[in-house]
Image (cartoon, rainbow, N blue to C red; front, side, top):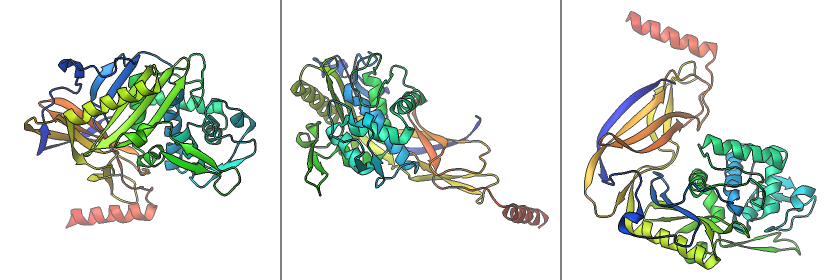
Length: 388
């Protein structure tokens, strides 16, 4: 689709990184010696700070639930699901083994309660219950998972279930998992679940159930507030973690660590490296208004444009600042109706002609189709102005 470009060259500060990919190996730093694969990225820009075998296909175990939670959060945002809705447990959902909250067939829990079970206790039964509620069956939900992975441009991921329980031809990579986590973190409410160390279900009954986060770093590493652990005998110990400090959020992924202690140590080492060596400068917050664009046939003549996610610039600590430029491009000939949150443009941050980051620009409001009377008055007003 053709786009209308608006170049905004301004004096914004940026500490020169020199590349969108930064390797810890350049300084001889080894961060995940005992993992099969690993990656460390800065959340807002997606810059890779460290990598090891990041495209190797491996079983993700319960890190699969990052995609499951993404689809749940998207259903909530789209109004297809509400946190206080009660969901009935099917025989199939109740039959899940592994980590669970021991749902019984016919038992009902709210979406909020089930999401607590998934995010904190990695509950397989809760995952399937919500998968069935959203898609009608786990099989249909798995198709949604794989379709969403393709939409995100992830070429080395394939799901066979919503839980991560062992299954043939069920795999992902450190890179793909980091990109899924990056997308999930656009839903800021998710860390209210994944960041809790403990909670309770069935509190007003004789079956009160204590939830303890499988990600112990939530309690023991300052700033960690997610996202998802994983373990099977084949996958070994896996973790996709996220932490925020001094305005910078990073994502660290480890596949195939030999023990939980080693997994947590390697993630901690990557987080230490990120926060000691890099920093970000916030340019825009999420949902910050950046422009207005004309819309045809709408009940309003213009739509407000807002950022779809936080926009930041990444730098190595202590480096000098240089000027950068912003480039905003908008879809040409926008027509109503337009839904709030619909992608209508892109923001690109450049330095010396090189792209540092790209972010979606979205509609900040709903624009409905104009009535014939609104269109008539608008046309009449234009004719009046031409005759003045």
